[in-house]
Image (cartoon, rainbow, N blue to C red; front, side, top):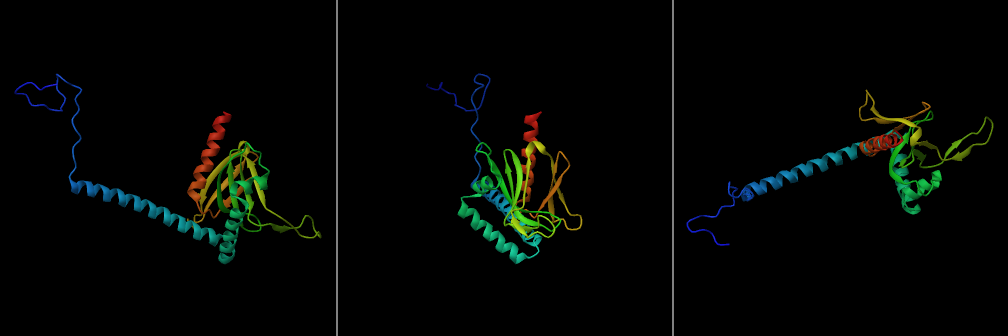
Length: 216
């Protein structure tokens, strides 16, 4: 279409053509570089904070055990076991005889607080339950005078029997963070020394909330 003589074409909206849109304002090269550096700085800052959190949580995870050296060796051994046996999903299914329709969502290295002290293991969160299994078998006596036997320390709470999953921290040592699990019968379990604490809290509470919403 030819422009009318003596008229200058403009992309700006007018009363005659309200649908014309103005072109986006072009940034100067200096502004573009400044914006790119600002975005990069924010990403680096976020990555640095996550790395610092992971470092603190890992150190706290190792310190939770009676021996830092034994905890480090145990964590390496557990990683080797996970690789050898085909991943956390397979270990979870073997440990808890999970049916095919139950899907493992997340797994977190942590400790379970017991009367005998913290037990190193893994917390599993599936579509049906939250569970814990120790990394290694522990010795126990079935009855006084009996020979000691060995077994993995396991806890499993179906989501429909889980009343609350509450995060908390020590007043004296804020770096020591916990998750309290409470069943509908008021049985309590305390998990601690998480390597990925914030993620564990978030996914536990999401799973609990989602499951309760489905049941409502």
